[in-house]
Image (cartoon, rainbow, N blue to C red):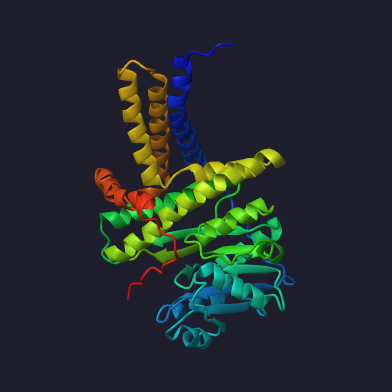
Length: 400
């Protein structure tokens, strides 16, 4: 069969717009199903009395704040449940404050292996002396909302897989437009899209704090990692090991966006660069194992991971749409332009659905007009991925 050079050129030019269409359509599908899934009845079951539970809190220099976090956890513990704080490479009074709040504290000092993954590994090895049936991870700077511990533990026990709470970022005091946009973007990533995946019967990514899992799952892979998005990596490793995470819409954990520009930039750089690193490393693994094992859940996770950070996804779709239009006007082919336009429509529809159902408290219609300028301000974060990639875990500075 003879294939013309023009057909090969058209196929090559259409590859990137087609990939962007697939990922943008997947995002729109998640947002659409999230609107219906939000009304799903919640399971009010509790963890059976004969099932043991431990809460593990990794903490690095959290003096002044860890007491407030532990105060949201301790009222939710049952008789016999354990609360263990890992004071990891601390140079302040974190350990003392945690003990005063009633937690068991274990201290770790290791200047070469730094990061939450190593702290969690240290905590799990401590618990292995008398392993619980279910272990819950909660970061030291968060609020665990009432009823969330029971919801997480019972769902993890029933499903026999890791579960992820709704994890949201609250705006700082005196928030600006950037804070509203960041809060909305975080909500889309950590609530809307996992909610849509749950409604579709598919697993989600681990998004950070508020994670529960059966002991067998917690010890099925290594959590000892200094990766800058260790939670996302852990969730994918668990999925490949047969424990794909599930969303838990009945559990809520909140933290607060940093108010300082430098701290906010550090935090966003870590998230965005970490996502891109995980994308390049894990999408081939997930697709390969999805085909070999015939697992739809791994395919869904590959698609979820292939949706770029929302600002970058928008930038990429708009740029490719403009380039494809130039190609079409030059007389080569209109197919890439049609695909890119379809991707843009899907992306706008998905974000619009998410805003209509979940984001109107974060952004007004007037605020949306300023979104393009905000997106351009983040260009330096993405460009640094090519020139000065974030490689090491850096703790975000807390507000006083």
